[in-house]
Image: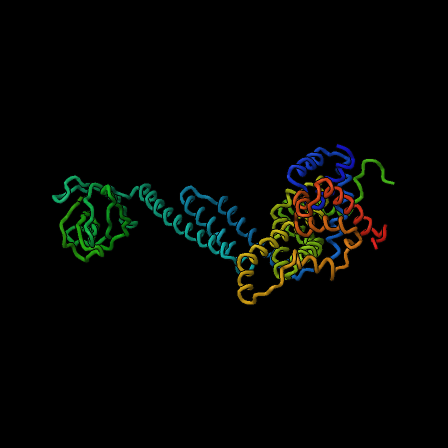
Length: 262
Length: 198
């Protein structure tokens, strides 16, 4: 490559006007430390920056303020992530980490909007999407978390429920904790008719059945239900499932499908 | 005379390179100083390309936000920090200009046409033409017309050399030569070494 050719490449490069192939050639020369290319570029880029400098214009202070706010918002979200990662405890790690990571990211997004930086439809969509994702993740994490907590707790008992006349093949397991509530997982139940649902009942000794929630099953007859702690006169020792109107009823009315005792 | 082994005297370019290295490490204060040094240069160029002050300030913010994120990618072998900022500002401004033109072509223009039925044909780039030819007394005015045209199309319209060649109907080699001659002359004009073409 002769001197003129290098000078032409340097001029095109300084103007940002080289075609891709020429640009790659010239950048390779620069990367290799070619003295002629480096000198030619240094000479000609001054003409380009000089041309730009003809119209130098002081920006309004708001632009810098907005940039600094954006940087601070980014910093806060990064700190939140770092803080979370460094404070992970084995027991609650997954949940607290995701919650904080996502809330940190959302805080950054919200801060950015607050300073009026990027108010575009795309941004709103992303934020929405993030919020939905956060909610879904949180819900899923909480569900899994509660199951893990139940399984780990020595006070958790497992109750087997057996199928009765309407569905002899059905069975269920109830993980039950007197103060934390429990989780019912059932299988082999027939599909739920329109407007109906299965309702779980908790019974303490000879007391009346207390409604513990309604659930439905998928096509395979599998269903599950997270059960809140039951306010009953004594210790709950019996569980039963009946078929009831979808909204649930205060006292059982339908046929009993499953039952089990501690 | 410097004794051998001492580092070279610090120039504004060296200082800017050092600031970029600090920005790459997340140094907010260095970013503030870098902004103060180069934002005016960038904004002037962006406005010259876009004209609209609001859009120009948005582009300026985007340019410097990208600098904050990508300072680590600056390579001093490929040019001075000043030239790096100028190229980024130019590229962003031209992206925005093209987006505005697309929008005008597909939305604004048909509406305008329906409303006013104006017979006036839009110019090639009224904004740049007005600014560079009229309001701004530019060193470009000191270039022979053929060289000025190439530099303008490259710098203010963002065309590559082969695009310029096909736009002007000239051989690519001619465009390359004019770009070089134009920049060399521009450099001399800006340094006050030669008089402008009459």
